[in-house]
Image 1 (cartoon, rainbow, N blue to C red):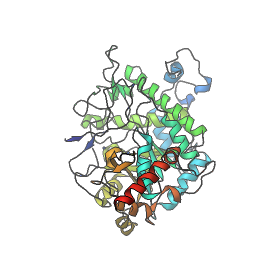
Image 2 (image 1 turned 90 degrees about the vertical axis):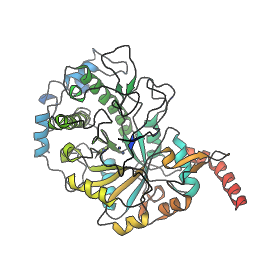
Image 3 (image 1 turned 120 degrees about the horizontal axis):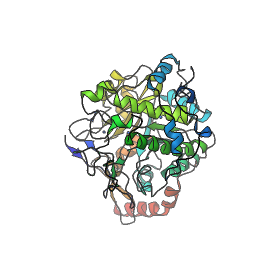
Image 4 (image 1 turned 180 degrees about the vertical axis):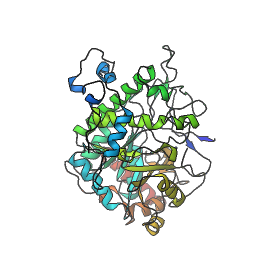
Length: 453
């Protein structure tokens, strides 16, 4: 397997090595290497061993302020959960979460109304939060409809130098944009060595640092790995709750790109599949967020990328696949679409959850009805820009996207951009502050560009 290291979100005070990256496989179109509700009673405290958070004691508190005694007392009963999911009937115009608040239902219905008719533009963000925005706005005077954020450093000690949750809140409430969150889940590199504080999401051979974290132990109560998993899921639940309280629906994409073994939650071998380890971890996350924390703002995006990793259809709304071609490819990726559709449950929307190249909008228009991507989400940094001008305006990486092509994409009738989004309940429609702050520099750069023509 040939790895192409891609810088993710860098932070100065991180206990992992100098840079973390999302490994994008580079051998052809990677689709199984790689970017978030339901009617009988859900699994509850009565079905397990515990009361919900409000009723639990607070005798064991983590450094993050989590009540770990209460958290560990709640355990997912996988058999009971699956039985209840089997008995559930989900309306096609409602997310799978039975907790969904009106804002989340409205966004879900808006996505469904446009599915198969248009395609939402998206963009994963890098740690320089303003760079992608400025690159888009400089060339098109518009922005993608959806931004991709990452909880990568939230579970890394001292790693969350920037408040990405607040950035996402601002994007939705002040600018009216759509929010997607994934989670490169950093865990201890060596849980048996208390002196080793390094954390990672890669496995050995996929990146450095790497972790030996055991997914089977992570879903087994009584293990150190299980305590880490419960702690981290509940920590992320707190961030999702912040978004919920701010009125922000989230396309939630945990445990992504599980079809290969480069992430610790990824498919390793036949035993991994037979024991349903990925599914158990998915159900554990789903159960804790849905039934323990009772979050109401999640549209679930399953990005397992393999038929052997299928999860229950009543635990996800959108199925996604990540595709990074080894050479320039602005096609609609119809083969990858058909592959995803082949192992996805009927009625689910399909998305290009990460991609190396933006599909050509003319080709998307021709194929609508046959290839129905809900959205596309190119990766950050040099998948969009490479370097900057003297003034500081990011230069497009023309090996992947030219100015003319980006203008074509963002002006296409097939593509929904930020300017075309409706004003969602409780939001405003203002340009992001980082774009407004760069307006004078963009004007100066446009003047320089005009002089050189």
